[in-house]
Image (cartoon, rainbow, N blue to C red):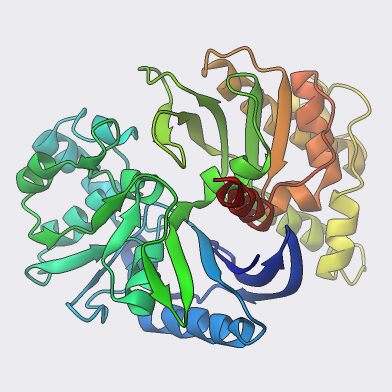
Length: 404
């Protein structure tokens, strides 16, 4: 079976022609940049995003494929008209406009309003991003179609208004266990939107160029699928642009974590997000590069990363943070990795599950073996030595479809 795999990430848009889990051809392009970021906004031209995706798919489909599977970044949204022409930009999960409005949103909706979605009330939810704009006096088009990022691409490809539960839940507007939209919450929020048909399993939702188009799957779940997690014992550690952890379980419980839906009903990824990730590593790389230039080095990006990925921890960092500043640079960076890893270990304890092994995904984890070793040391686990990116995950999804 040949199929197209599409991964709409926060940093790169990747597309590949796949067969039996192997990429025959793969193309990777930087994700279109934000149109503007004033007031904490992170908005991307939805037409430019679509043009990039369409160009990639048109190029790859010429080699023959029978299906299109996709993995997408979550939480964001774009509003469209009936023809799926965007009437707003794509509002990313990185949008920060709602941060200042959260106290008012919380008072208006209630702290537990979004719990049926399995998520916490936070600014990255599409619900909060849209409400924040309304509170600033920005009128949303009446009866516009709410689309997740992947749902928007599906609409442009097939004219079908659908989205998968893994992407619906992070909008804050879904009822995961009910398998439906939380319409009372939409009414309470005062948002006049048309919601897509909700899909809770992995079945075709339309056709494009003779190919079966499958629903948009959340990138966290797709990467975890590639890791073949042992329920409640394997910890999926995703270190990409953002950092998060998740463990597969059949239990929906309350705690300091989110209950994110799995690819099929009845299982959840017990998740903690907001952990150190690629953005933190980018800051460290910038600092190391600046110091290297002070010493007369050229500090090219590859040289900076070669240094950072070789800073393997040899011993626990000094307890006194000021004493760390006197250490050699490699030990100093290794100490920061140990702090990074400790944040993940502490978060994992909050999942209240008997974790025994790790599975990594995300570009930051794949690029930095020293950081991975620090995380493994914190957990007392061996490095599995395998990266579970979205293409591996989509290959696992395709294999499962073949067995049905």
